[in-house]
Length: 457
Image 1: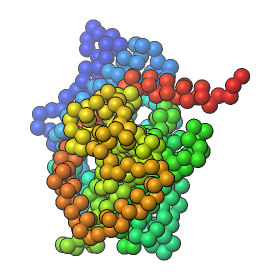
Image 2: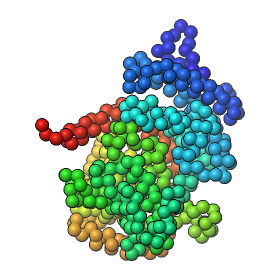
Image 3: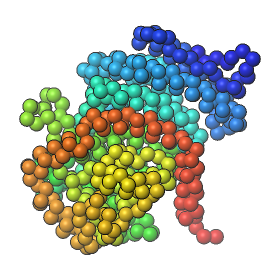
Image 4: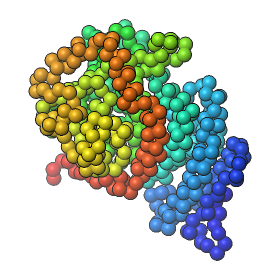
């Protein structure tokens, strides 16, 4: 339990409990639940996060730190047993949100339950408790395990429920409007057009959901042989009438607390980016010894810029075509968060030195720079983009391409290497979301954006 030592003040913070040596799953779960409950009582006596003074903030941080220490111990000791309990011995497959809330019910205090996460989601990022860090501890523990982690990553490679509900419509109509993404079959290609014009195609929760659904549909449809991703035409005054590939994460949504750690930051890496790279894993009833997954080649067409998450996307595509006025950047240092699996993949394409310049120093690569050949295949004029995309589709529409790209992915990024990276990413990214530097940067970015939107006096 959370205790204050004799002679110390409450402001000094709690003394963290430790798990007993050689405790069973149920014994350790009981200790965890007791400490977490004690911590929640201490937090309940404090004002809301936005109203706390420095001493109260320090006390809250100490309470969370004590509870997180025992959560980390618990997951290191029992990750496989926890996962087996939640999945009936890995006979059931839970997606990320379902899994983490099942953990909240089965192991009280391990992760926040739905009611606490609902409270969090109603706050701007700077005024949250940071409970997603507890989810990060949980997912790091699961993904560290070669057994539980592999089962979870495989689960996330399967078709999403939304895609399964829409696949017959796409097969029949060759077109599905998913809101932020329009999917259209043209000849042998499935064209995904991103349509978030109000924010220059920045990524938000809705776009992540639409992207996974669209990628699944391309992979499930027998008449679609190649996937193509391109940004739509903008209404933003600065880029009105022009196509834009992606402005990366929506910093306004991040500032307002509307970027989900689980459904955005983890989901994008473990679902559609992984499915583009590795293919769609078929359930046992549909898989055969010859076809365990559905693999297809992918083309990215970059107009204007691919920033942040937009550039991360390019690292899993088979052919990248850029307009000659486009540029690429991964401004991780400026934003303060980890650029997904970009740190895992970029150096493989560019070499370590250039990758560090891009990620750590914010170096921008223009399509006309010599270095652009390391991240894109073809650079053409803006009016030649359509023809270049069609030529790439014709070239990649070949059964041998799908087989060989699968072998390239296996050689370049084995699934176990990705799992190990994602385990540390799961925790590090959760912590970075609540870093003081990140909060300050997104607040300043939001203020600058608001000032630009404000009408002149």
